[in-house]
Length: 493
Image (cartoon, rainbow, N blue to C red; front, side, top):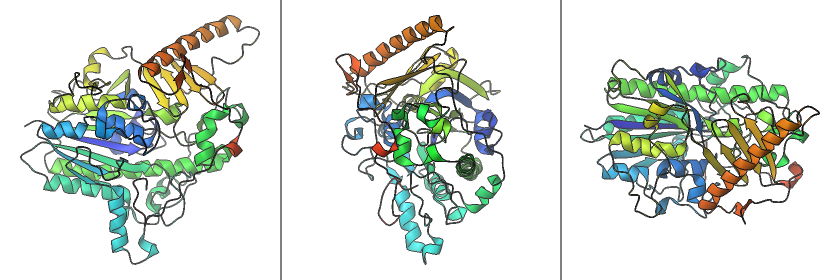
């Protein structure tokens, strides 16, 4: 029988939040296990680091800008017009299940999945079982975008994280045993609110936390291109957090990730008992990251490392790699979420969309095929609203339509984006500045060419669009993410 495939996604998890990958401040034993057993893609990026576009990319193998979906919107949702990953797997004989946050439109559209359970089903269940506010989730009042630390109002076993795993296990126990399966287990955390159950908060309450990243271009809030801060000004208050508030935010954020990790221990344990680890590929990633105070920013949307750089791990069936020659390997090649669909189709030996079908060509590649050419030349072209980026093996170029500002970083020597190569030269740096200006011009021209080919509205007359500059938070509409758990919605976390 063909292998089973489990795709596990988190929501808003940075690339640097796995213990075995170098972060000694976070507990992630089961993500560590995946990394030790599988392959880690160290340079995985979301080409549009927002919820709906990233999930549409996973479903179609196409970038957000190609799909015309570069923000969270219900006005131009593309999945109905493209062949989807679960549709093709179903046609190949797979039983398909979506469990957890999908963030599709309409919210209960299946787009090829045979069965689906969403977070709103969890909230319906909790309300039906509740005897009052004392045992309801999210009764703390902190919104879906606010980043102050808060404690969950329910025990971990009543949480949405636990429910997502419990219902995934139920599927594994009750599935059709005559067919291979594709299960997408999709967590809503660590997306805000950062509200871990009390026992997970206690693990981090007194732990020393890494400090947020600052650079020579972001030493103060006023030095940062204000267009880059627009999502922060809109969604949260991070730009005015104290160091202790930022540390508490990170503690709560890490605690929600550890909660997910320990819940995955239940999933992996049941898979072992059911004999599924022997014939199941596991793919783990996130839809985008979280700036978490770096450069005074919170949330996502832009292409800074915290926002766009994501974890991506593939663990094979226990019998697939004799003597495990690839186990624990790190791959440096640039990859994106568009690579997941061709990878899963290849693992399943399922047909790809025909290249002759208009608009059905996938942009990604099979991730396992990249093992033979590690660190090969690839690029990531990013479009997220008015944020644009081009990432190459060496450089990352940022463009902010607000005011037409640019930043350029050398990824080889400045992985945390602390030294802007386009800063005005000092008395000794004129020659280097000219070289960096030429590099930026070359990257900008390449970005224009790709976006033009995709029909992007951010290009006009062969140039990147420039919009009115933002000068501060008062010019941005605030949206803390107030949502009641009574009204059905797929953006409850």
